[in-house]
Length: 484
Ligand code: AMP
Ligand code: ZN
Image 1: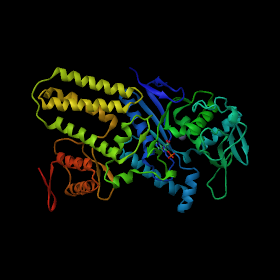
Image 2: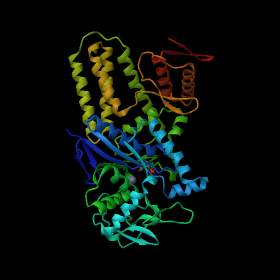
Image 3: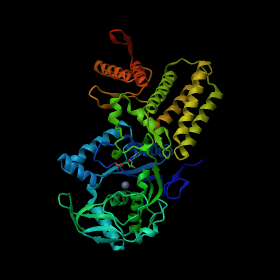
Image 4: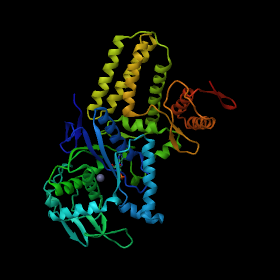
């Protein structure tokens, strides 16, 4: 079966192939940097990461662009309140976002592009829309007249024909089903940042930012555009009206939208105050890869309700996989090759591939892995798993991890920052190994994890230390350790 994605535009599963050559041109709406991103936001960023990795596994190259929204109403409001310049203020949260994405092992898109560095491109896009009769000016601001774009509504599948009588909005986000002429260029206001440009002194609206930058780097027609489902309307609908209003060509072939992360069945959002950040989870003793696993484990179009039990279950699942790998690497198996088992490995791998080809069905892909791990452990216990079966079993695990990327443990330092463990997890001690201070840090982290009853994490640390040749002994006086 071929690679298929659900396209919001056509509301169907469609076979995917890039338009040009082997390169997938893809755009992801990035963060608005006015605060720390929460783990709901990260669901929308883990999804394109899984997508990228699977496209590559299927032989494609990527040209992936993500924007950073670093000028916007909330940024202006909150930077003022913090007494900082816009640049100072957004630099802090841009840096935090990039750190968090690295901690979650999200591959860097080929290009990360800040809005404020593309003002001339946005101005030019507004000028082109004006030349084609899509705009009007009111109080110095430039608006898009949506009645000039008859296909408006085709992405969100709403019929907006009744509400196009020139009502307009100045803000970037507004209610679903409430289509209005939207602002492309906001006239300068007292105390707000503004650029002096041929279309007047002011600043860009949010929507024009994405169309202008996507087309600059990826051309008139993109293969894939991703974002959270809440961006479908108005943001992506407006992106289409802008881009297609300029070029007359299809802007995006495949629109892919990630469902929300909820808490107690409500969307996780800053305005509801029900958010957790990566930093919050770290303080509770959870490893970042547990969150990565949790966010990736539910197919991106399904709702995912966040719970700490879910995060603990993710920790346990990772730990099972690590123990299994350790067993593969360190147990002595009888010589020879079990052909029937080799066939089982090939089948499991084929089921894994087919699941991800099917609109990234990560839940089924994981089920294929765990069925296989269970079967392998049973075969090992029965002496039917032979030394000749090890390489293919390890290879399957490597293929799994090239997408899920959870096998390598992260290290949480005493200072609280998470760093990637320098070495990969394996059953043998590594050259150089951990320093005494690093061992002490991990032991301290294990104590914290036990205190918060996160036994998955504490066991994981014990296993990580064992893999580095450090043996722990829990005594009445505390933990003693020695190198084996
Ligand atoms: P923002 O930083 O607000 O521009 O949002 C960045 C991304 O996070 C967008 O793609 C949003 O759709 C997405 N997002 C916001 N809240 C959630 C949530 N609770 N679950 C999943 N994605 C979300
Ligand atoms: Zn966008």
